Image 1 (cartoon, rainbow, N blue to C red):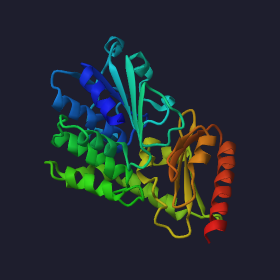
Image 2: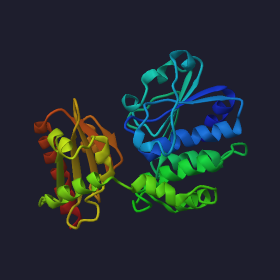
Image 3: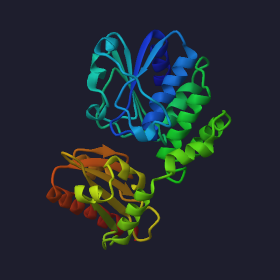
Length: 316
């Protein structure tokens, strides 16, 4: 029923603006721009805009639009892949007429006039495909298929994460029938500069997993400057510890200009409760948070170790 309500609003509004979360990943772009391309292909007479700050590392997927305040008036706003309002890129979404939330993260902060949240979906891009599949009218073209495929690949770790279900593979299989270069897409998504590869090597050489099964990576401004990296570029190796035995969960602390950003990953213990305690949230096995000091970072590590120790006591 929810999909029908969303389709009805999309058909009703002539001006539609799509948003996604700050510090975007392929699923954020894939769902936001993929849905926009579907709407434009189906209703060429509608005005469809893409809101948010551009990320140069994702230019291979799409470029976004410059939108003035006036254009938000009377618009239908669709926010993709964003669990809470604080993380919506471009807070002018509030100027729109109605807001739709489409997301696959736990719905800790409901918002919008219409919400479609499916935590069983591998990605919001997969949900956008399901929206298309529920309609006899929507048009999926090569460009939208490419974007949705990129989003699914990104959020499932190339189909390696448990979130990739049988349905995920069915959706991906259908998307590959469209005309886009998957090899080129993979290259854009996963090829990294030499400096990033060297930095990854240093992190691994210094890795000392704790008895609890926790691995900690602390990346301060000095280390970033040494390798001439931005905090955004470190996202490329957030899964660095996923294949290492005896590691149950790992945490990245990346010092930004005014905050220390936190990325939590897990192979079993549920980590999003820890993230939620520290100004964040996300999936049970993949979450984000932020702390203000390294002392607060150490407290987060203590909480993560407690979660992992409890998990080990129940599963070993």
